[in-house]
Length: 246
Image 1 (cartoon, rainbow, N blue to C red):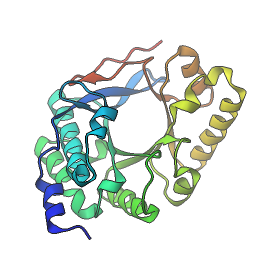
Image 2: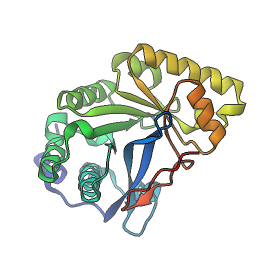
Image 3: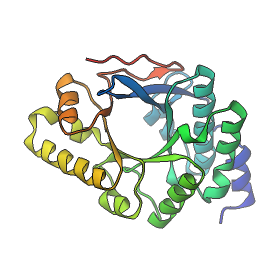
Image 4: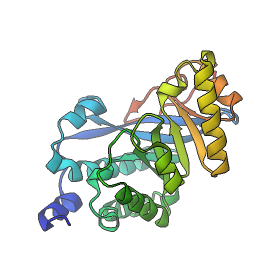
């Protein structure tokens, strides 16, 4: 159980450092339309997410995670972004799902952003201290009406075990599987099996890190029409980039 000091910092604390949000579209290549925007944290000076995270000490992780959620929703509402809003969250920064979601709910109500248009992404690369805690978080978020996603699928610690215990709305293929997909027999085989598995579980697959038209077509040939990457648009700081379709 977190202390009252920690709870207060999580709920009411100021961001550990100034942050801004960049947005990158997720598109439906079959219908040639925008599907969602992913919110990506940046420093006030445009510093990358990795640089921002390096400056976050463990005791400020709660406040940082909360600040990112609020900034993402407020910025998306101010820009009147169409489609869904995908927000990355840090499972190790959530000490108790019901309490830690309160500020997110209050922010969404204040700016009029529908909960069903929010997707919470958990990065598979992050080692979760207690897997059952992550399941509690995801289940709690779903019960509130949020959508859920496993990010970087195929590159981290959770993998198929997490998918066996919890079926999110989306699985985002790690860009390492997408890179060069069109010319790699092994990658095509792996992605094809993941796509079939997710279809059986009623989970939609998103291919991320798409940089070439050939990679995009290879994904589409495997039935993966939701895609994200530089081919369509780079992240834009404080703006909604218009996606390009090859």
